[in-house]
Image (tube, rainbow, N blue to C red; front, side):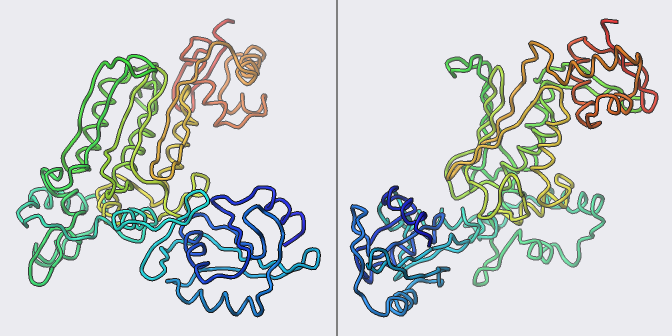
Length: 442
C-alpha cells in the first residue's frame, strides 16, 4: 500500500468498507466474512479506533491471519501485506467481494456502517437469492400435483416445438420431471415453484407475491390516480396482459410505413416496455414478499421489481446469469426472449431509436427500477438544427444522404428525423428505399 492510499484511508475513518484494529484478535474473522459478503473492504491492524497509527507488535502476523481464515467457509479471497510507518508496523488485509455467501461458525455476517452484523435465517435466504446461490424456481413446493395445469403444459410444449423445433420425449410424467416442473421428494411428486409460476392457472394461491400492480397517476406527486389494476395468473400470460394494457392505453403519437403496413409509434417504445416487464417477472427475487410495481406518471413510466442484479452483472456489461434459470428457459422456449443476456441491450436500443423516450436503470440494494421518461421537445437541439439545415440545402433526401452531409450516424439521423416528423418540422414521403425527407418549412 502506498503512503498516499494509507493517508486517504485514515482520513476517511472506519466505515462500511474500512475497519481499524489496534492489534490482532481472533474475531477479525467476522470483519473478513462481512466484507466478503458485501462489496469488499480493508482491515488495518496497528491503527486505533480514532485513526491514530499505534503499530502492532504481533509476530508472524501473516501466519496468524492465515490460521484464522480457515474458520471462514468458503475460504475468502484476501491479500495481506506488512509495512512500516514512522517505525511502527502496520498490517493490511485487503478483502475482495465474493459471489459466494461466507460464514463463520455457521453464522453469516454483513457489514452495516462500522459494525459486523449476523444475519437471521430469513435474511440469509434473501441474501443467497440476491447472490444467485439459491434458485427459487428450482425448489419444490408444498402444492399438490394437480396444481399444475396440463393444458398449460401442452400449450407450452406445442409452442416450444413451433418456435424452437424441440419435441417432448417420453411420457408426460417424464417431461414434467425433465423440465423441472415437478420433483420427486422422497417418493412424493411435487410441483417446483417455477413449475407453479409458469404452469398453474392460479400460481398466486401458492406464491402470493407473484403479481404485478399497475397504478396510473394523474399527477407526479401520486396524490390522485386515473386507473389501478392487478395482474395475476401464469407469468407468461401476465406479460401478454400487461402488453395488451399498454397497447390499449398508451397514446399513439405518430406512425411509419413498414412495407405495406403502417406501424404506430406510441409515446413509449412498446418493445422496451415489454422486455422490462419480462425481466421484472423472471429475474425478480421471489423470496422477497414484495410484488412488481408499474407506476405511470404524466411524464414517465417506472417499473420496479424486488431484487438487484446478481453479483458481477451491470447495466454496462449485461451477461446471462438468471436468478430464476428455469423461468428464463421456459420464456426462451416459447419465444418471449431470444438471446440470453440481451434484454438490457434491447431496451436501450429501442429507446435510442424512439423519438422521445429515454431510459434509466436505478439499482438499489434489494430492488431494481427502470424509468422511462418522455423528452420534452420545446426547441430544436443542435443536432435537430443540423438536420434541418441539411434538408434546406439538399431538398428531398434519404437518411443516408443526410448522414453523409451532417456527419451523424444513420441511427442518430433516423431518431431525430422521427422526432421532427412527429412535431411537424420534417415531412416524409415514400417507403422503404424510396423514403425521402424534406424540411416542412421550405
